[in-house]
Length: 423
Ligand code: DSN
Image (cartoon, helix red, strand yellow):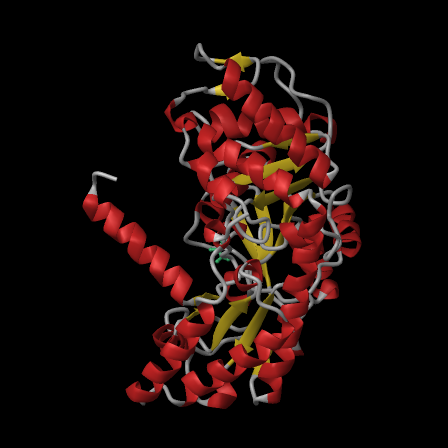
């Protein structure tokens, strides 16, 4: 690479990732094939529009790429329509709102400080600025309280109920949520970005066939490139005729909101890399991988609890753990910093009813997708839990943190990143 400045930084990031354990639950390690597609010549091509209906010439190859990605998405998730063009999750959610709502309509989503997402109606995001937003919370036990959600829906009459989270360690009862949505005649959007890989592997119930629209990013448990997809069922797109906002028109409404509503040219290198990841996720060993993510998370939960850590909801059903550090007497930021020093990368996070602010909240969020991609198993979670305890306890002792950091590095290097593994 001629640009030595960027080359050095890429190497530095490669070293950081391979010397450390990445335990931010929304991160993962994509395969060498995904990287190859991302770094390909497809990045040079403009192709506004959809396969067979483009505003540019020379799209015969990228049409095939996009069709392959769409077909693989449809087969993997069991839907009849997939839009694979969203640049990432936040634009994808905005596109769903644009498809189904008018400005000022009511969005009801899980509050960010209770594990939701900015784009589920948080007041400083477009979803909270251009729409009327009402936010539900979890109960004091950290679980969603479906009765409370039902009552709020009756009172607020949302036009769309958004279900999904970035820090919720339990499964979603999609059927129960559908009953709530139907009782007020709203749309239901399932944002499964965090759990998509678990869903396709059968490790978490699927909202397909229950929610009206399913949105997922492609780089979390699904282990692809950064990107997103919007999935639904209904009749295929029709040419420029105006269409009503009814279920059977969902594909047309979504496609028009993505392009030309929100986006211009699709990122064809990203689309190709999504197709690669979807093929990988359809292989039998992906099921084993997803089962191991959950198994590792459950083991880590047990080991942390045995060391005195309190977990929101007491444990996990999925890939992530939310640790409330109040009883340990350390803040989320202090814990994140201490763990960063020893090479365990996590992120500070609010816990339900957090008395502290988001810049220095009471908790940390931990996840197992990335370390499972490197091959860590249940027994390794015991080692990791002990390091977490030692790093937090010894946070003021730089000598101790250095020793721990060497141990973590030695251990981490035994598990090469998937993109470095010989296949
Ligand atoms: N920022 C992502 C996460 O960390 O969960 C969600 O977009």
